[in-house]
Length: 213
Image 1 (cartoon, rainbow, N blue to C red):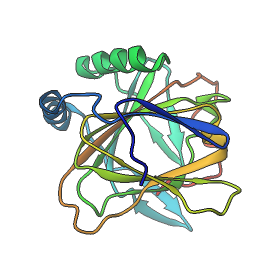
Image 2: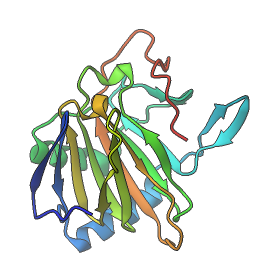
Image 3: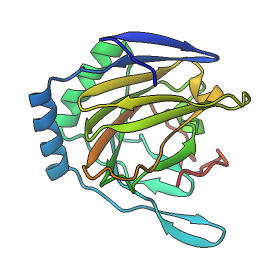
């Protein structure tokens, strides 16, 4: 496992990570977790694989500016207007990262059985060099990255309560990432990934060819 300090940039082959392990204090992170758990309109999405309709192993929601529509693996997420708490959080993330975002994907991992498989956030509507900022709340979960060409073992992080991670540069084109299943993990985790969607006339069509079960 990599051990980061308070704010450290890690250069990868074809990308970079910047990590704040204690971006929010514990009390503030607790309050934010409770508010989002209660107020977010959580949904159970389904994807189609080999002709079968399969529930995504987590709950999710999509918030953003008008027109910031997003889809992946055949899942079209309806854009909901910003909750005040999410708009304030977005402003703080932008101040810390120096990036600008117009949307956020929220995932609720109910326990260690919930997960997201290997993928890259490289859908056409995210632009040529997507910059993605990720706020984690609740139970710590393992976050892994692997290079698309190299066969070396994956880079592994543990994203804790109140942390912030920025995936920058060309990382979405050169690396994949996942949150694997973890036996024994009982607590819930909420992850908010802030993105910038570039409106497209037909941006509900997923051309990535990937699947994110």
